[in-house]
Image 1: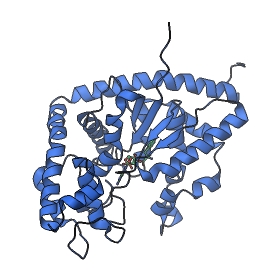
Image 2 (image 1 turned 120 degrees about the horizontal axis):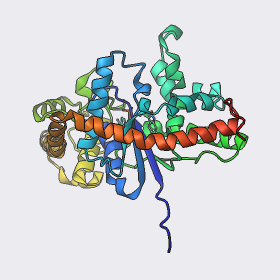
Image 3 (image 1 turned 180 degrees about the vertical axis):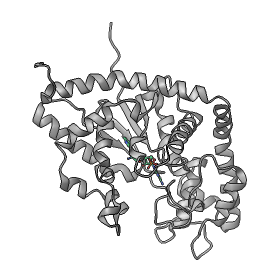
Image 4 (image 1 turned 120 degrees about the vertical axis):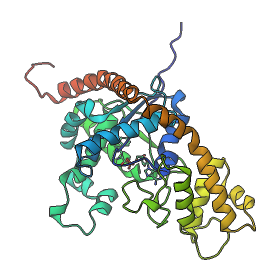
Length: 338
Ligand code: AMP
Ligand code: TRP
């Protein structure tokens, strides 16, 4: 009798710091759903990662629930892809401390996300959690022997750091952690702001016209696409000097399953008006099934709680085993376990 080989473990996380955008969807959630049957998955709502920006506990609770409902509505199947809240598994925080002992101050100082988020701020305005953030992320990933981490392009450097941390721990204490790889797709990994196309689309952007939320209704989508900035000439063509239109074309292409040159051919000679109208229709059509599912979960919030609890129970079994192995290897604790 032959046993089937273990499926690679996929792990990824998302902050509950606002409503998920089409950037989160096209860069992350959509890929998680598309490949969930191929892998042994775990997905996490990283609430501890959102503590520095989300300071209202009711908002925190609502966002965790809302994001979970959105992920289920987008097709995450809890039977094969358990979803849980990070803080429901205490080992994430515990392992963070242990890993901080193999993470250099200099490495954390070089993280571009940290540099971007703190640029121009005084020391007193920067929480140390912002600095420490990548160590918590490394612990999320390493706790579950994750092989692949499907993320958008902005997380590439954090996954690289996770690999360095894993290698350093393994070198010091013996093979303990699987060294993970980032899984970043060629298209969709960097959806830009609709207002400033040189900036990443972000759910924490104070300008709501800069992003489309997965929960946006058709009239809101229509308005936001209408207001989306375009480039000076009127051609629907993708090129580095036309970042605004290239971004909209990328969104169109992914949803219509067309390459950028096919999108360009499709709109040849048509101008921005027809392009924006078709893009709006395509977005509305693509989000309709997600909206329908969201309404179902809104009517049944206990189902979302139940699924998150189930997910946490599954994650805890793995996290407890890994953390005891780590503690045994480092020698901490009162037991003379060797
Ligand atoms: P966050 O919302 O920052 O927690 O990001 C959750 C996931 O969505 C990560 O994998 C990000 O890389 C991805 N993501 C966030 N914003 C974008 C974007 N504008 N384009 C593509 N992927 C994104
Ligand atoms: N830092 C990621 C982001 O801002 C979210 C995240 C936290 C994550 N832990 C993770 C992503 C583990 C992948 C794996 O997008």
